Amino acid sequence: MPSMLDAVVVGAGPNGLTAAVELARRGHSVAVFEALDTVGGGARTEELTLPGFRHDPCSAVHPLGVGSPAFADMPLGRYGLEWLQPELPLAHPFPDGTAAVLSRSVGESAMSLGAGDAGTYRRLVAPYVGHWDTMAADFLRTPWDGLPRDPYRFARFGMTAIQPATWVARRFRGEKARGMFAGLAAHAIAPTSGIATAGIALLFALAAHAKGWPVPRGGSQSISDALAAYLRDQGGTIHTGAEVKRLDELPPARAYIFDTSPTALARIAGLGNAYEHYRYGPAAFKIDYALSGPMPWTAKEARSAGTVHIGPTAGEIEAALGAALHGRRPDKPFLITAQPSLIDSSRAPAGKHVLWAYGHVPAGWDGDATEAIERQLERFAPGFRDLVLARAVAGPPELAARNANYIGGDIACGAFAGLQTVLRPKLARVPYATAHPAVFLCSSATPPGPGVHGMSGHHAAKAVWRRLRGAR
Image (cartoon, rainbow, N blue to C red):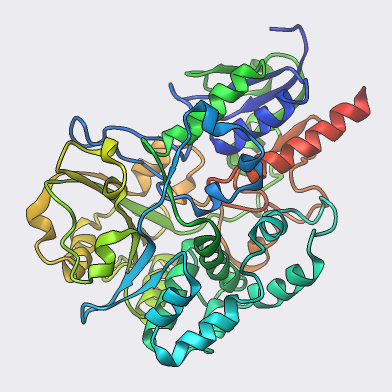
């Protein structure tokens, strides 16, 4: 290791690894320090239940990963990353056995919403279909990093995106369209009446039409392993099992980049109360299942969908998210489920399957939502419980223990609420910089926010690169 490194990265999640790669490929000396024994952060794969059943403890489906400008610019396929596309990206079933779907086809998606809303959906997405590559660069950018590539579409999208999802949903007449739109917005883990939640919903819909909602063969660990292998080929080093508690424990470097929560960065770097106003949001309650067969969904569309949303109406979804936000135990949680073994046989023994599911609960909640979650699953897949061979349950305390970035079980590393929705982690010209000139933040607490896309690391690396270039 050189006597003075150009950069040290703390945390080997997708953003930390992306930041390290971006610097290493530009000739900078880089070392990564990870507290756990393997790289991955929120993109890991483990045998959580039974031998041969490979589960993703956090992220599983990656519409923004396959569509990420940062990942697209790296030869990750050469390092084992292979995207697998389900027949349908998303199904949103209803109690009568029907379902709305999000398909690669705009027309198929529109018609599943009912004749009264098909045209409305087409008009909503039409200005952006076919323009993903330029728009993704604009959606997943930071204002600090120059002008948008497509100013007209960016501005048009922004006028819709800044609205609450509940406002945009009023354009639809029926419960199917409103329910599916609310489910897409709920990925923000915030009430759909919050500002900019319409943008979350529209972004996920456009990603499905442009790139699908794929899973990586072998699980989410494949993304992290590919990034790590590419980094090593660029001369970077990775140290696992190396928990960092103070900045002076790290080797001398010109820059330190933290793929951590703002809270942890402030503690480790000695920045005091620099992020005292940063807020964390509701938590997830996650269950991974080993199943003896495929999910017996009543809606046939759900049987071929990679992702299935459970919580049919917009009202039910809003109530579930509101309960989590206001500290109430879940009764009918909104669930996001994934069934990667439908298209990836490596995830379970022959004939068996894995199911990935989570609902929303209050931050730090130490109760058990297993029964409430399984009632919801049985509601749309009668007989599901008979297929359960084993389950791995993780409430907020367990999620926070597994990943230090998930404060109180918040897998988004920060609430989508108020100004923090668009100004993360605080108002600043360069949101990746800190009060310490050599310390930077690159986690999903920075723009563009949560998701396995590496763009927060990409942008943070640009800020560091400019500083290193200026110093030289």
